[in-house]
Length: 229
Image (cartoon, rainbow, N blue to C red; front, side, top):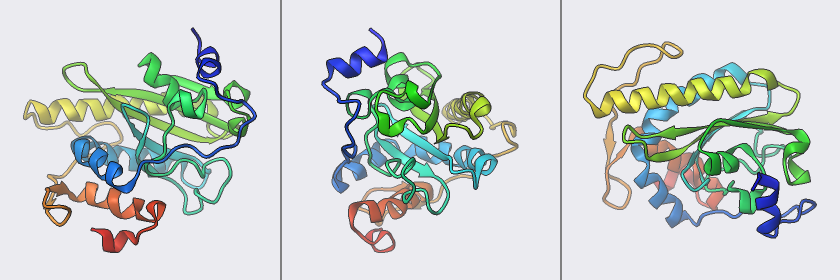
């Protein structure tokens, strides 16, 4: 069954314009808690990828194994632009709610995938190019998805290669930390500092990168991000 068939079977309307479902704040907090190590490791590589596309309208997205956005980097006006306004913290991008898209289809295929323009099931996404790659743990379990999305005429040819390299870099770093190896300074020349810990949220410990995720996500949940943490 291909992606469009799955969307049709799920009852999606290709002409529909409904907003994607969003996690409640407590659900988002739980997701980030459960994936804090992945977010901490992935974010420097996301920053490096974003620097390559900054100002082009592209967003760099990290989604969990269900397709919910854990972290997103983009231009200051990304949530005001029609093409990228739905790429926000806690938003769902699995196929059954968002139609054929790179994040949602990678969840099914668990391999790199790109969707361009009218290849998207939902017409509201026909202006997008989305490229995504899966992230796996050292034991082979599926952890999430790294995605690059933006206008379907910008950076299109390089998008898939860029996310594949980024996913490989994240997985290499995951493996290095798991086996206590010294991470090699490659993949964009980045290295990852030892995370600082904070216990200001519900008594748990978070790296500074995960605290940032909560602060950045606050406005999406109607709270002041600077006060919620």
